Structures are given as C-alpha cells and as structure tokens.
Image: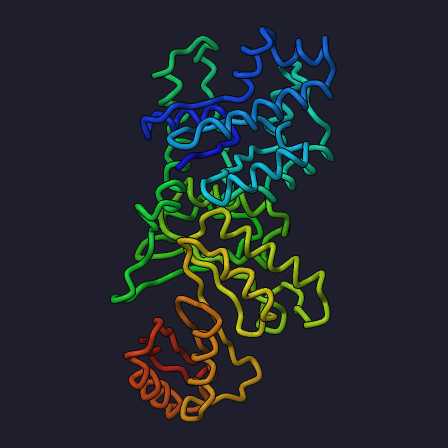
Amino acid sequence: MRYIVGKSTLASITAKALGWEVLDTDAILETRYQMSISRFILTRGYDALRIAESEVLINVLRNNPSERVIACGSRTIELEENRAALRRFRERSLVIHVIRDKSAVTAYVQQHAVQHKNPEEWERLVTLFRECCSFEFASLTVKVPQEVSPEAGANELSVIFKPVENDFFRLLRFIHGVDTNKVPTHQKSYFLPLTYNDVNKAIPHLEELSIGLDLWGIRGDLLASYDPSYLSFQVATLRRHSTLPVIFTVRTKSTMGNYPDVEADNIALQESLASFCQHALRLGIEYVEFQFDYPRAVIESVVSMKGNSSIIGTYIDTKDVCRWEGPEPKQIYDKIVDMGADAAIIAFHAKSFEDNMNLQTFTSSMSSNPIPLVALNLGIEVSPRFSR
C-alpha cells in the first residue's frame, strides 16, 4: 500500500503515524537540480519545470512500490501522462486530493508575494485532481496566534494544527474500515437533516441540536451551491464541530426538494447529479441516499464507488397511490435491494388509523429480509412509526 497526498504537511503527518517514509516530489526536484522551484522557473522556464516534475513523479511511483507517502504539488496534474500515471496508481493504492480554501490561499500568496495561478486556472487544476483522486480532504484554515513566531518548533505547530490532523485521520480511519462511524442497526436511532444553505450558520446551534442525536443530514439540494468544492467545505465544517456520522441527500422537486427533476433524456442533468453524489462518496460521507426514481445509470454510477459508505434507497409516495396492504411496498423494497442499496426507506401517506395498522403488519412481515428497512407513514393520521 502507498499513498499520494496532495500537501506535504499532511503527507508528513500520515507517514509519521504509519511509520513510513514521506517522499516530497518538490523537495526531490530541488535536490536533484540544486535550486529552488522558483529559481528553476526563472532560469529554465515553466515548460522545463513541468517536464522535470513529470520525470520525478514517474520515477518515484516506479521505484517505491510500498510503505511510502508521496506528496506532490499542484503542477503535477497538468500533464496528461502524469494524470494517467495517477489513475493507474489509484487502482491499487490511494490518491488523496487535499483542497484548501481559495480565499485563504489567495490572501497568503499576496502577503508573501508567492507566485500563484489565477482563479480560472485554480478551478481547472482542482477539476483535474478530482478526475485522478480516490478521496478528497478539505483542509480548513487554522488561525495561528499572533504570538507564535515563524520559527515555532514542531511541537508547538503540532498543537496548533491538531484539529486538521484529527480531521484527516478520521478520513483515513474511514477509508481503511478501522472506524466507519456507522450507527448500529439493531437499535433505534435519530437523525436531523440540516436545512441550512450554509452549514456555518448552524455552528452556534450544533451542540444543542445534537442532544440525543445519532446522525446529521446534509440536504445537498438546499445548499447555496452545487459546486463540489462548496460541498467539500460544508462537510469539513460539520465534521470539525461534530463526530456524528452524516447522511447526504439530494431531494428533487417531485419529492419535495429543490434539485431539478432528472428526466431520462436529460443526460447533462443526470451526469451532474451523479457527479454530485459521487463527490459525497469521495469525501468519505458515511451514508449517501438515492431516490427510487433516479435514472438507473445515476444509481449504478453511485453504487459502484461506494467503498465503506452505505447507500440508502428511498421511495416517497408523493402521489399518494400506494397502500401497505397492496403489492407495491414489497415490490418497491425488492427493487431497492436490486439497485444495490444497503438500507431502504419507504414512506406512504396515512389517511386513516387503519393505515398505521397496515404499516405495522407489513413491517412485521419483513423482519428477515436482506437489508434494513425503515417504513413510515406521512400525514395527519400518523401514529408512531414502525420500522424493521
């Protein structure tokens, strides 16, 4: 097993925890040519740098088959041969894309007069890294106290950046199945969907809201942006303030959500929805939900890359045409199983108290089926919900 991690600091943290060697491709290049990256660009040009970086990367990948953590910079992704090498590497090891907040990085490079790419180039490189990575980690900015000098020792800096280290190790534990942070299925659990368009607005209330809670829900369709980077930092923010697992949901307009309904002939929207859900998996979110009426291609593309995430298939009878005593609930459940889900949620409407009794009868008949089922009634006639 090897890692590629996109930031040298996190690469060093990972290597230290594993007892492995860290290989920084920028440092290797500077040692080989006996000059800094900036000096290399000044004397030999940017095109020569890209070729030199590519030679270093290919050599490092070829000659370090195991127990290495490899840190590579943003320029590595520019050449197609490098992207191909990273994709091949991803088939047998991990490539973790580390993303920082653009505004924080921009402020830093302006303050320190560091050469940096324009915003359009930033977005292009981020997109290229996502095409090659196994997972993505959003590294939240940590404010360094003014009294800490630039020459601060490793121990002092380690304490300051401990929250970032904890967040990163949480992702690594999930990836390797050491701690997938799942809720036990044999007991009652409670979850709360956060309907904020920005999770930062919920921070002052999270401690109080989490009392008695087992899971958070992030409604992707209600977020202020469907941009993958926005989702990355929303998830990172929630995780910084809570250890509870997360369910990611995208509700379409036909199921009382805000995301456009995905028609079978709208290929562009299908690809957009699939990419949105796949990115949730790339972030190591514990549970990702798909709707029963998503196009099959979307569902298959999500299920195929679930890893240690659990997939929840959901059917909501928004047209109020299904009944628990009919054949529909079992047919729906079987189709959700066939889609590759790890759990099913089925919601009908109750028009009378008898509908609640029919729900209880149905759940009792489903006690020995292959995946857990949450079955519930909606409407004013609802009595306590039943599930198996």
